[in-house]
Each structure stands twice: as C-alpha cells, then as structure tokens.
Image (cartoon, rainbow, N blue to C red):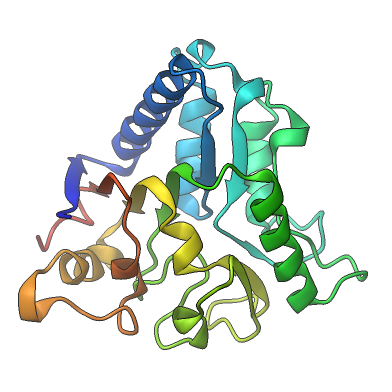
Length: 244
C-alpha cells in the first residue's frame, strides 16, 4: 500500500492539521457506535499536536470519556519524571480534556517495584486483555535516525515476533531503558500516522519514502516497518519535506 504524504508549511501548521485529522477520526469512529483506540507518541511535535487537540474549537464534538488511549513507547523512568511520554501527554492533552482515567493506559514506570522486562510483559498483557485488537490510529514521531517508538536501527527488538511490548535496555538515545510496542503491535492499526518536523529529519523522510531498490530495510530505517491496515500517512512540515 502506497503511503500518503501531507505537507504543511511549518511545524505549527502541521500540528493543527494532525489535530484536526485526529478530532475528525474520533468523531467518525464514535459516530459508528465504537469506542476509538489511539496510540500516542512522544517528542516535540507530538507535544504541539497534543496542545492543538486540547485547544481545538472542534474538540467539543468528541466524547473524550469514550476514547481509549495507549502509548507506543515510554521511557522507563520514575512516574513523576517530566521526560516520560505519559507526563508530557497528560500536561498537554489528557488533563485538559475530560478523558476517563480508566481508559488511559500508561506504560509502567520505574518506581522500584517492577523490573523492566516484567513491565514490558505487563503492558502487553494489559493491551491484550483490555484492548479491542486493533488501534484506530497509531501516531509515531520519526527520529533523525529513522527510529519509531523505541525501535532503533539495528536493534534486536526489530526482529521480535509474538510479543506486544518489549524491553529496551540500550537505547542510543537517553534514557537507555525503555518499553516499546513491537512492529506486530504497531501494525495492528487501521491507520498509522508518521509525524516528521524539522530540517534535521529531511534526509530520513526522503529515504523512507523512496521506492524500489532505493528503499531502506527496517534495520537501516525502522520507520519503513510500520504501515496501517487501511492507510499510512506521513505528515511533514516544509523543512522535513525539503528533500522529497
């Protein structure tokens, strides 16, 4: 399936476009009588998107108490650490709209009671037992090395099969310990949205969207390993799209 590319003039415009697309999707899914399931991501552009969703004049069209929220990855840090994706999403989005806390599924924190490997297994079990089998949308920031979630180039987690969430012990980007959904879990989504902002990511975006013999492998550029069952969209700002 060919990926779609949506370009925006700036990071701010990109955030508004993605926020609008998310609100529209949630309204559509709820209009079908279903509870939408969304996997959030971290990073600078994700924070802007979360803020844009919370501030959207269309946000009132969504019943936020009937939205299931998951995370594609997390830094294994203490629960109050501001660098956790869940903390950033809570401040920018989850505390600003009437989400049902029981439907917000954060990944375990490093609070001293659970080992990293057990924390990853626990989140996989939670997704298996409380998820609906398929996300409606997975949102993924793309790193300048092409990583998505906490799946980094050349890492053994890229080849994991039969697991939903995996521990990461040696992330090249601090902190080293993380939890990440696997490709198998991320790809169980109707739509995958890849979010790319900034000149530093222009080369990786161009490589990921190349075709034929020029297309990199997942070991070289993990972002090419995710795709939606119905739709895959790359949201790029002008700087990130400079080499397309």
